[in-house]
Image 1: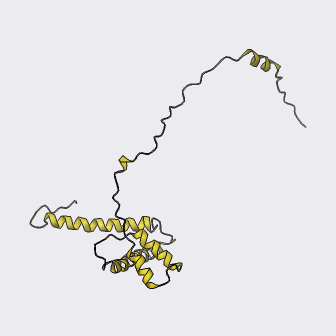
Image 2: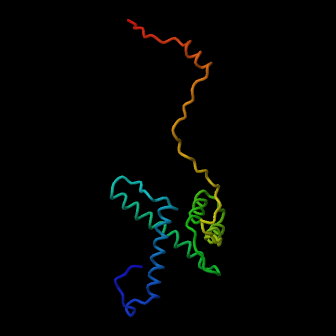
Image 3: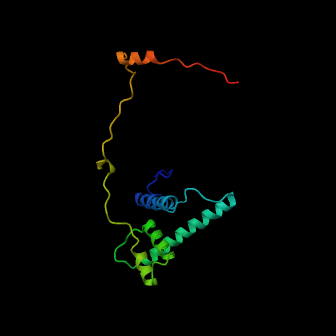
Length: 163
């Protein structure tokens, strides 16, 4: 974190850590907004409509996540909510896939980030791609005797004018 406050009395290390964690949470929220919700580009044509679209989209995502957290607060262990799973549940709800509100709430509660720990990408064994050499200068071979005979039999084309 970059700050102009250098005094430990005014800003302790734990306070700096807390500010950083909150800022990181905001960064994750905006990443979810842009990538998962697909709002990298707004669809409105005028600046005023784009501003309204942005506000309503941010508000709807925040309310959706807040409602999900309220349903998940009764779970025994603290968990991270998966925005993509919440959106998947809501899309299914709009299509009428849940028969009861209890089934919908159960699906919302299960919209969490999986507990699988990702490994570093450098350890992945992707198929090795061949490194191709750039083409060099062409090699010119002398024609064979048969090819020379065929070349002598070719008659040159003459241009005729139509007219």
